[in-house]
Image 1 (cartoon, rainbow, N blue to C red):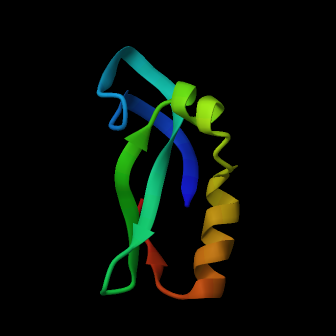
Image 2 (image 1 turned 90 degrees about the vertical axis):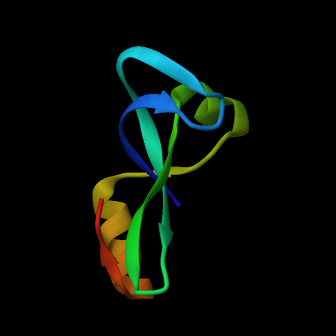
Length: 72
């Protein structure tokens, strides 16, 4: 899932921003149940691909429903 946050770079395009921009974390669940950021996604990729980006509150609710714990 994608969770809104400020990011310093986009791991998908390798673009480094001069200052943080409003993008998203790609968040995934590991084997221990921990949900954490696995890469940064820039705003241009979100717009181009049409990714749905959740707020932190929406992400926490989804994690509570699916199980595990948030670490981002």
